[in-house]
Length: 126
Length: 147
Image (tube, rainbow over all chains, first blue to last red; front, top):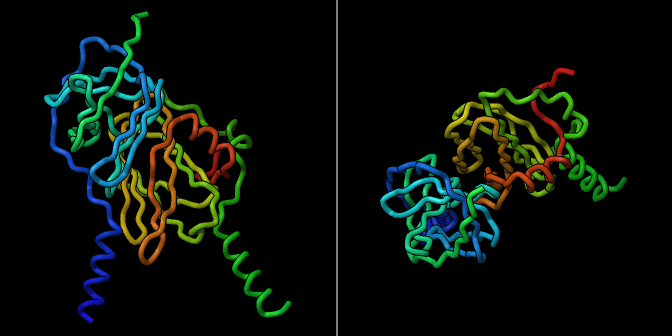
């Protein structure tokens, strides 16, 4: 009986994705907004087990800085990260690598365990 | 009608009863009020899948009941700009957090996935092109609209 209860408990736990790991982070807004496009497609695997892809050509707006890097907000698509719940997310870039995500509602940084290269193309000012 | 035919008919009737019925977006679009300048709009919808059709949880936005997740149904909510949280609850509660800007329209799709004892209905943020395309197939299940 105990074995059955343990097996059921394990099944219950396995069925639940962990919450998105995050820590509070203060966003400093930019003085002017620059725009970029993602130059090559990007795939990331979140620690929660979910994966996300960002297609080439997605337009990003400079949304400011946090201590962990530069915050880039997708403007031509929506981007979310997911664990137990789903959260709208912006990209956080540092030295040409995607290091994690900024969650605007939670005002928090969610790090990637392994950063991935991100190629951005700046848009000329119009 | 033999017994097996009766069972099939009864199941079919139950499934169909679970799907939304109402006017399509094109039929009600002229009755949807224009967005106020100080608000944004959120469209909620659920694809017309038979999977888990009988599971139709209430949809909450910022803790307030705003509608229900019905297969093939859509409704909308106008809200102040800022941070918002959408939640649905079946055997577990699933939440979505997102921002809404003044004059912005956002699309939230509820989808069903397998749970342990029952299906789980999860809200997800969808981009505008996909949301607009999928919404055209849905039936309006929101509050009555002025004609």
